[in-house]
Structures are given as C-alpha cells and as structure tokens.
Image (tube, rainbow, N blue to C red; front, top):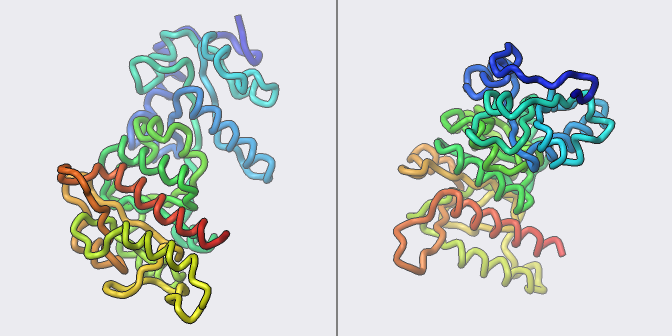
Length: 308
C-alpha cells in the first residue's frame, strides 16, 4: 500500500517518527519553529491557511501530514491533489508513537509556527485584541484563543510568562482557531502600554475587583448608539482613563490574568481601566476562559453596533 508515492510508514521506532514525537517538548518546538496539530478540524484549518499563504506568494505552514487509512477516509482535504505530496499514510501504531494524545484522531500534522511582532500587530490597526498575562493552563489559553476567533478579534498577544500557545494541548483546545487569529508571542508586559497607547488602543483589565461594571458599559454603549446629537456623546477617539469614560466601541486590548492570582499589580497599572464581570449567583469567580469570552463579546457587540 502507498499514498502520495510513498510506502506506508509502519515502524514506530523509525527516526522520522521520533523526530515528529519530539515536537511535544517546548524546547524542540522553539528550536525548530514547528509544532504538532492533531485531528480533522485542526488539520483542515492548517491546510486552508497553508494554501492561503501560498496563494499570496508566501511559504505554506504545513510541513507534513501523517494519517492512518481511517484518517484518510475521514478528511476529504487529505485526498485533494494539492495536498498529496504533503501526506504520508502510517499505521495506527506509528500514529500513536507520533502523537501527544493516547488516542489520536487518525492524523497529525507538522506545522511551521506563524507569529507576528507587536509592532506588526499595531500596524494592522486592530479593533479588538486579547492579551494573555501569565495564563499557565494550555486548555485555558486555547479556549481564550477560540473565543477571540469567534468574537472576531484581530489578534492575540501572549506575554513571555504565559504558556506556549503551540503546546499540543493548547493547539487541540483552539479546535483550528490557531490558524485564524494572528498571534504575537513572548511579549514583555511592559511593552503593551508603550505600543498600544500611542496607537489609540485602550487597555482594559478584566478584574473581578474592578470599579467599572461590564454590564453598565454595555448599557452605555447601547445608549450612545441611539443618541442623535454628537454633542451629547462622549469622545470616542482615544484611550480610556481610570475614572473617566470607557467606550466599548473604541479599539480595545483586554488583559486576562493568571488562573489562580489574576492580574498582577504591574499588569493592572498598565491598564486604562479595570472592568469587572458582574456575578449574579453565588459563584465566587469565573474561569479565565469564561470571563474572556464575556469581555471579548461585549466589545465585539459594541463595535459591530457602532458600525451599523
């Protein structure tokens, strides 16, 4: 049997198999600038991004796809003539040896990491950005990225003390969104205000003890939408100030903090305002991924409302 003019890989101890498996380690990912994507949805989106880059005259990101016979039948894109030279058929034993999970979903892909600098991000004039500040759990990081994608955010910023977004668990948690949202990684938190402020991007800290209530900010946004007199509406041209008017419609970067300790004093000090998500029940707090979803959607709704 063969696929793409290659014999089926059947030796789980082969050098290439071990080479792929080593991408589960952060050091190896950093050294090679590559990472693993697993499962049909992630690989479908990786291939879509690969061809998007190639159409723009840039190198693609998919280096190779390894799939079992079941996997080949599961994802039509693997049988696309454009992809045949990227695909190698492997036995289930080989796939298990390559993958980070005990029960991989029939396929893994080796992809090139694609990131942008903070300056490049700002040059694109983003309207909505999610910033991970010391977020440690890869599942939470992936959830926030997926929420950012769903809310239509323009970019993700990951500070140097946060988890590697190319961690296999984080990649799985994004369910393909990693290939939709540009990410700036390894960013120093002190650079955020220096870069975002001059660009007119307000920095809002998601803080359970914040003095501003997200619900009230949303109500103000709705009220502004229906004001007919420009003289009655607050100026929406610059960044917010603590104690002043926070305009959700403005370009915004949301800061989301560590799961156990939240945002540090240094991180809070960088923000233009501290915003709390109100809790109506007995729960003490929200998971960072849930809070991020609520905050990002609040900004996204306000911005879409303002553009109608």
